[in-house]
Amino acid sequence: MKTLILCIFAIASFSSAFGQIADEESSPALQLMKLIKLEQTMNDASKAAFSPYLNQLREQGIPEAGVKEVSDAADVYFNQVATDPDLKAEMVKLYEKEFSKEELLELVAFYKSPIGQKSLDVMPALMNTGAKLGEKYAQKYAGNFKVELQRIMKKYQDDEEQP
Image (cartoon, rainbow, N blue to C red; front, side):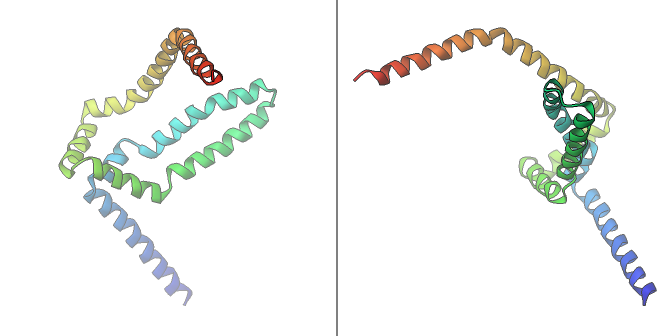
């Protein structure tokens, strides 16, 4: 009886794995998500976005051991989100809504090409550097924007005070 249960479990596991492989081969959206390493990209982006919070903890005097614990807990959380099968299914639907099957196949072909592979390798760093540049230039003009916002708010606050 125990052997029969193990055999059934093994067959079910193999069938499930085979079904997933077949789905990935037949679904250009799944192929694309695999090529762009969606789960890893989501994890990396989450960690990058969370990094300033970890720095705030350090600045508040939280010992590095505590910061590490928070970081580890966040890593588990980010991984749970990124690997959720329901998220994957909804992402497939999203890609299939925005792109035709032919377009998805073109994207798959592109990301399999040498330039596509290079873009996957360098884009995260480019996006990170670009975000920092955007922040630098936003700061350059932030003072003027703040003055303009204060002028606008004062104008409407003054209007409310008059009968």
